[in-house]
Image (cartoon, rainbow, N blue to C red):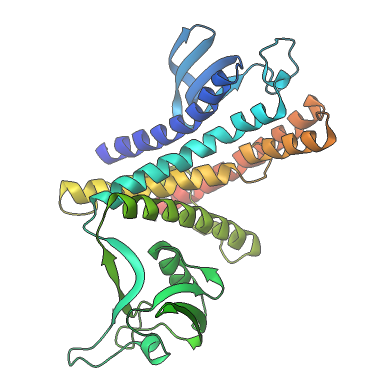
Length: 347
């Protein structure tokens, strides 16, 4: 029960920070905010301060920041629809930006708490008990002190990119670009396999001493890497490379966060595990909200871009209908994914 409460609290904080991004920029742009809510459904607590009603709602699966003139025409001079396109764009993307910024901050914390920063430079290859190499990548031409720069054309910035590319590529025939002695060397038909364990990772990499500069640099690169991984997974879903059963909704996320909070043996390990998964969740939430789909922030951004090009807004009722249909489809998907999460938990 404790881990479920903790997981709901973490998810609630992530959503709250997202909505606070919309709220803060709306206030800075002089837009009237009517409601600011964390959660969905009936209000558990609510209080009105100034022009805005703040509420905490029953279901911790979302939240909203309701602005005057956001979904309908309004004569109020401070309404959302009366502000310039750049200001409205700033409000729309602010939630996602806050999630990405939170992810970056969490990465700074977890990286700084670590003993070393994982690099993509090979330190040694796997060997058996007799010291003989069991590394296929070494046989394929990789060498100690090679820094992996690209795999099959994908730029490798951090160990996150490296692990994802190796673990989620079906075939085992890679084109690898490495930095060797200051030059880029391209190796064809590289295999990654520990012949003793058949594991894909068959080498070790160097650790870098954490400094202020190295921590900030790694956190920035890894924020980008995780966001890009989310985009790649989204494309895989469209292409059919990832099935519906691989998706998780609020129930699955809460369960995963709760499980992460129990991993490890010490309090420090528990905290690192929880923060690491929270980082993935907040960056995924921020990036997915920018996808150009109806009812998401990215869908609203598309309408604003069209308005900027046409130099006149699309009729609010037309845009509202598109978002309404999108919200309906999104809720159906949410219900289906939640059902899938529950079945997975029962099994």
